[in-house]
Length: 355
Image 1: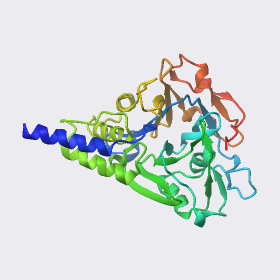
Image 2 (image 1 turned 90 degrees about the horizontal axis):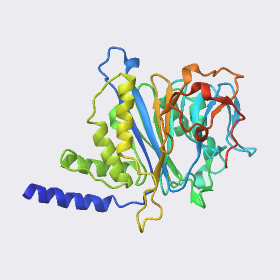
Image 3 (image 1 turned 45 degrees about the vertical axis):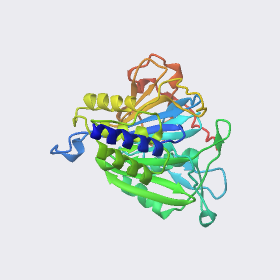
Image 4 (image 1 turned 60 degrees about the vertical axis):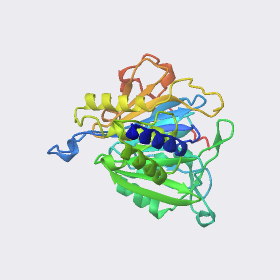
């Protein structure tokens, strides 16, 4: 009885810590059997949800390598020619939310209230629009180490704007490569904070508060033990804790179908019901779509909560050679799409960055 009272009191305290605005998104890295003889045979799937209070239409784009691009329309913009082809999830047909390149590198952007990208020390550096920032990282890097090196060099100045009636585009980012090396990076008053880990050390990312505080909240719940009690709200800390517990207590398999099923079930367990509303919480967010980047097999899976099925694009079947056309899959046009959707990609103009 004393034990149960202690657990209950602990839960109440943690719930107080976890009271955060309900802007949402969740990222879960599933790791297969790392005892496999061949390190490159280990299955790794980066699953993420996009949760928001209003619809965010998102389409799938595939870009080839060898394309000349720039980070902004200004004269001082970052300019590059892409080394790798990639698949992007592009929201509003104007900004890259997530993507995976042909080397099995995945970069995801998740909402993080309070992120401030620049300060007085960073002014004057080459301009980089937030709408193409993820694309730049995927275009030019094959591994997490390479991304971190670019970030630490900090030869860019991020510019963003508002969307959805004035919401500031405040994000933090998760990076994972095919060998399971991960990084989470956040901007705090212009200062770039980078956290490193491998596989299960860095398998979960949600939203606010910043990553170190989230880890501290999770460590608190680990002492209680998820087999006794888990926090159950849709707040960012609660989703982090539940995701971490589930991800650490599932089978480790290198079978792609089983691994995908596990990833989908974990992400569903920390998603927010469609049209979920709570009186007094006007900013609560519902899950709109979920994606699954199979880094080993180069499959980018996607499911809209309003559509019937799960589908994927196989990068191995895409023409990523220099000079190949940009391809696009308009997700809303295929409500019954399921399975391999690579053939449904159609030539399309490159998207126009929204800011």
